[in-house]
Length: 34
Image 1 (cartoon, one colour):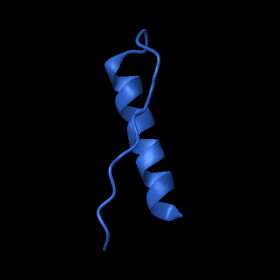
Image 2: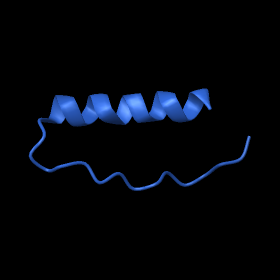
Image 3: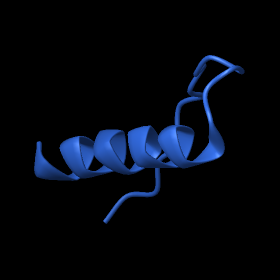
């Protein structure tokens, strides 16, 4: 398995921490599924 650097995510600063965390999880799962 190759190690790749994670791309920087530019999420809106005004989003609550729980929403930002959920978005990171969704993006990670989508990336894993590809």
